[in-house]
Length: 259
Image 1: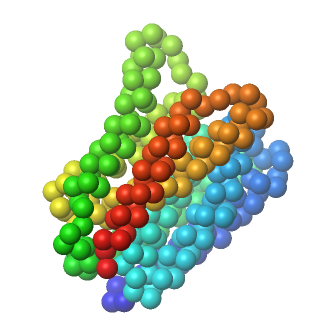
Image 2: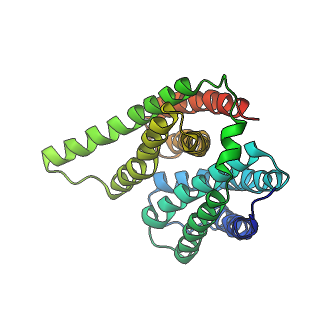
């Protein structure tokens, strides 16, 4: 590999180390989270997914990236984006707790590791690696659908609060702000670039779809567990499942069309 990923590797290793500490703390420290029982359940599942999926994906893809795998580089970038997105919620969404400064560190490490990884990505090599018959428009269309399916309910709910004059729960405000800024906007931007066959659209699509594979698992499993604990059912769970299944199909399709 010609590019110098040393800084990105060091940052990713430190990020993985502290992410494991945060996840283990969340899973074993019974009074760490000070949120409602519903939110605590989501944090529990989130920590579990981080520990058994996100961190292994991060480290595994980093190792194979250093061996020259282009697919692994895209997964590495996606893993970093997932952790960045994830720790935005911990940083702003969790009630202040003993891990607050750790969340600041994890978010910052995610940002810098992502910047260093993407800045060393050989975009010319990515362009050469995309197969001629890759279904670019189909993947782009899915990203538009994903953005619409998730963005429109949040926008509609935000507007309804605006019109009624009601103040939404704080947790809901965090979800609106984070999803519309860090998810829906990226989905739309990557979809537009991909539709124009811009190579960065391919990279961003791979990045955002890995998040679309991991985070719905948090919402689906967390929502089901929360129902058994609190009796509260999240009506968006069927939507999360549809988006997860669709994302799994198109993400596999995307990776199959790069050498």
